[in-house]
Image 1 (tube, rainbow, N blue to C red):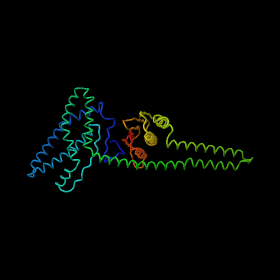
Image 2: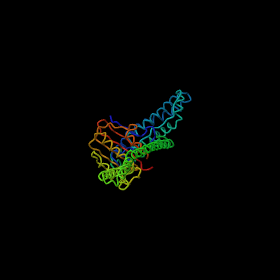
Image 3: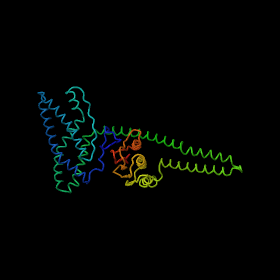
Image 4: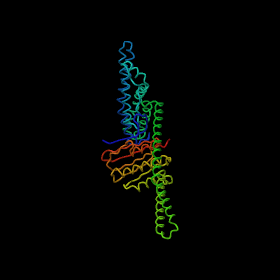
Length: 394
């Protein structure tokens, strides 16, 4: 079984298209999924509509003799069950993710629990979708059958109709707009908190590198120059003076090199001047593992997105060289509508995961600063795929 880890919280409602799907338009996979949805959904729509309408009518008509109460209870249960079924069915066939919805908590006996379900807005949203889905399903079934015969209909009309149905399902079967806005605010707040933590960790790293690296070198230079100054004018120590000056010169060059590396770690000049393609190619050239690089992000994304992508690739390549045992890696960066996708793949031993305080968790924290996400697929034996989705709309 694949080892899969992701930074996304499955309990936080969010809607996004499946990878590779950008909405309405031609596409073989999208067309086939839409055809399957339209043809296979019709029998389900018919059964749902008949059971719900008949249950509601019979239950309402027989309520006065109390027989209708259990019938209405059963109908309410069917509405909720069919609503959950539709969420799974739409997720599996259409290019949209229906967020997990929250229902009102149920306590007490059967009647009280039924009243809770009956007054739950989610139940009525489910009912609204199911009632609209049947007449819409009749039209979709007819279009689906025509699309099997006529290629132009299959190529253009079917995926567009499927996309429209996906938006309807998301609007009615997903959480209300207020709840989605609240969830987005919570997600952004969590992302910003992780971003603050990542920035603080980066500050400590820079401070440590300055203290343990360049600062120590410069102290050594100062001490060596002091010793050299003490020997100035001593005719018996020209060779020792020359050695001290050479030592100070060497330490000064090392300090400059370390400062340059530190500055490059904060924001690489090649990234600002020439963009991601050149910057990632330079990273790949320094890797001990053979790396193929493919970059297609036009129009050029914001600087924060470029920087995040650059450091995600750099950390991933470092992890590959240290831990994976891979002989080959591939870096692919491309743009999908309003986001930049970064994928780093290697043929190593696998088994990587987003562990707390691990290197990959640091990538997730860096991506979170711009509301991005990082996922890892790394089955034992490989290959390992690190994917980052970085939005360009913030």
